[in-house]
Length: 158
Image 1 (tube, rainbow, N blue to C red):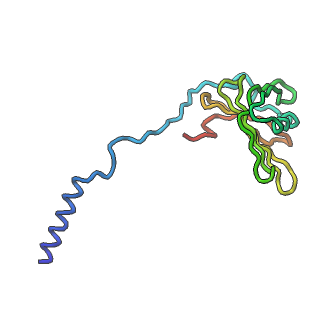
Image 2: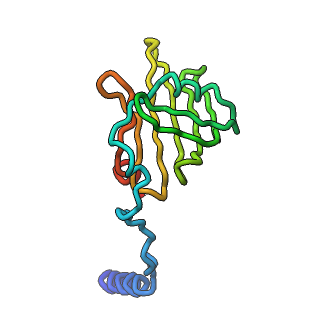
Image 3: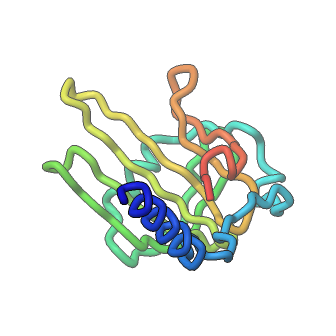
């Protein structure tokens, strides 16, 4: 009797599993990287030294303010646009500014100033556009802050 019950139970489970759908047959959407995006900064060098005094002036800009400044030392690399976001957190220890550029089509400059517990100041930021294949990233190199050209997909995963 126990063998018949077990056989019926196994047959029932098998019939139910045939009619059950565990997954949809649709393929989930996956964004493949488009390595053929146009380069926005192709005419500019791989590294651009940044003038921190000019960058610090960004943090005093108010929301909606117009910005037009040369942020490079020794060369002409102008950023023009509008301040679209300003944030100050942790008792002004972290301050961030976002500028939507009008001279680099579709690009956004985001810069953050971080005051460390020892009083030193660190900067981080990017000049990035989703429609283009290159990015400038703010890095500390050779005792200076510089904008370093990188590939979009080295920074962003879609």
